[in-house]
Image: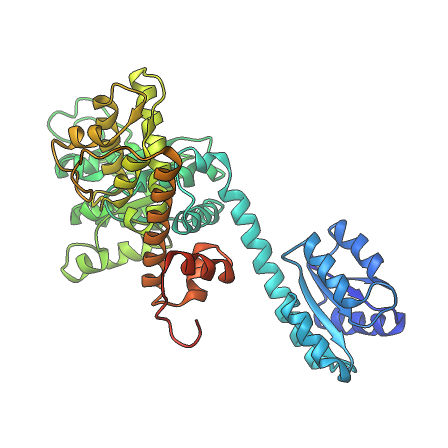
Amino acid sequence: MAQRILIVDDERDFAQGLARHIQAGFPDAECVLAASGAEALELLEAGEAELMLTDLRMPGLDGQELLRQALETDPQLTVIMLTGHGSVEAAVAALKAGAYDFLTKPVNRDDLLRAVAKGLDRAKLLGENRSLRELARRPELDRSLVGSSPPMLRMKEAIAAVAASDYTVLVRGESGTGKELVAASIHRLSPRGQRPFVTVNCPAIPEHLLESELFGHVKGAFTGADKARRGLFVAARGGTILLDEIGDVPMSVQTKLLRVLQEREVRPVGSSETVKVDVRILASTNQDLEARIQSGQFREDLFYRLNVLTVATPPLRDRREDIPLLASYFLEQACREMGLPSKTISPEAMACLSARPWPGNVRELQSFVRRLTVFCPVEQVGMAHLHQAEGGRVEGCAPRQEAPLAPYKQAKAHVLDEFTRSYLDHVLEKTGGNVSEAARISGIERVSLQKIMKRMGTKSTGGPRD
């Protein structure tokens, strides 16, 4: 789809001259002209442009006010301002107000084409990011991948991106981080989403049976093979197969998997003929495959065949802000499974869950919440139930004390402050104290983040920039 460029200038001849230069340099782009700021706003509201070049000085609605209103209509619009030589200060003000670039009149052709090229690249990137975010918010993802932290949002965008292709995907991450859920989401969002999704737990199948499970066998291929078996690759034909924990596959099977990836065909055990399979291959691992390659335990050529696209699942320690959401989700799920009325978690107990290290990641949290559901006979999970579920002291939490229970609002405020302080410490540690980078990661305006830091007494060590 052609990118559209809106040129706004009350001097019609000048605008047409710009359009001719741009069309010569970017024949696939479409130029639209507007003789006033008001006309430009009408075109923008109709979605007529991804890039706008506008004169600063115009009768009626000038370029500065047009910039303000245009960015209100579309905050991601890329705007290049055109100014006279005597208006550099105004151009700088426009940049501060959100303009992407500015050019001085008379406009140099090379400078014009260079600025337009950069502007179109930016507009394209923003458009792609917006599409990925919209796709990442689809219910198919949200039902299984709970969390709204920056690492989770980045992972959802990656899932949405790789799902659109038919390339092989390697899902990497620690145990318990939801790699199988990620693979299932990739399949659901892909064009193969309505076809079979077959998961193979590679370490769970004995080595002497794994080849037969994957590729099938003919009758009489080995002792006990009293009838032919088609194999899981054929069962997944037209859909997707997930090779879970691919790092544990023995070398003998790795060689045969390489052929499947290269030729898209399998040879059943005991057969001299191959069978074509139209299947998308996903693989997951919690292992350091590069290290296994160095130790001779994993084929390097297979690794490169699998590692066409990669999605990394973040550990729970990198997305602590998701713990309250995850704990509530798992509690509701467990109550449904046990046929119990819905329960809630007290602020004190939630703070304790959020402070715990969770080396087993999301899987460990889910198991613990299921235990809480069993040990909590009332409507709200409290500290007593945490201690009972753990059989004593809960790791990462202070011992239970017989102290008066604070009022709800006071307890909630305390938990929120503790979470905020912990989050700030974590994000600033991750960015080396760089507030600007911390603001980008957290999705908070830099000024707002500084206000929160001041309120919490958190200091940055990022140096002069911050």
